[in-house]
Amino acid sequence: MNDQNKINEWNGKFAGATPIEVIKHFLKEFGDKIALSTSLGLEDQVLTHMIQSINPQAKIFTLDTGRLFPETYDLIDRTTRKYKINIQVFFPDQSEVEQMVAEKGINLFYDSIENRKQCCNIRKLRPLSRALNNLDAWITGLRSDQSVTRNDLKMFEWDELNGLIKINPLINWSEQDVWDYINEHNVPYNPLHKKGFASIGCQPCTRAITEGEDIREGRWWWENPDTKECGLHQK
Image (tube, rainbow, N blue to C red; front, side, top):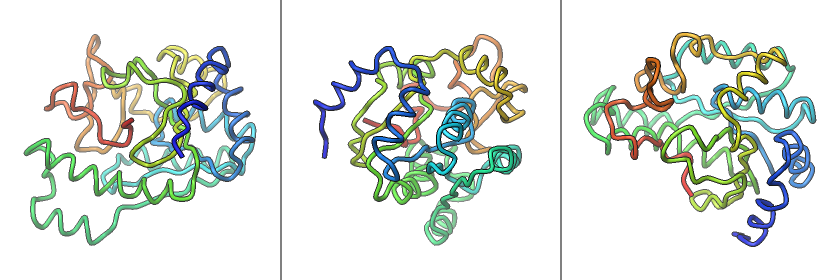
């Protein structure tokens, strides 16, 4: 149920709380009805470190679109081994992918925003829906300064699309805050981040950025900034 009053209350109550305080409270609050969705990005790696320090059995999942970088697959392995945790991997439906590629080509996403969103829907949104099934809340690594599409997000949101609560513990952190935590706690991260890749998704849709470019310029660079979301994070 969309309890906006409860969400508003939490946004006030936990306004000054640290991310780990928020995580500790809501892992206990929701029990096995909450999970971290990780794309293995810097923020998600920070959250994985925090969560495993509180409860190594807490649910963590990721989406394998079939088009990820080799470095991302390696990071999944390194992370699970380091923390001795299980990251559940959700895949897209094979028949849906095959039909899409047969009809529109292997790299259809370059041809139009419509095609790109169709690809994201099949490879990301539908697997996400399965991953969130039977959950009451999910944790994400969103930060408000990541892009123009995220600067009005709050720590607690109602996810209308998926029908559950979204918790963004790092919403007020800066990129420097993230790097400071990673360096202090020796958190494993994708080596592509040191090669100019600020945001890492599917290999064909991700590129390195140059100094001064916005952090999201490396994703779907052929589109306008206000369309650069795959649909995973909508209110």
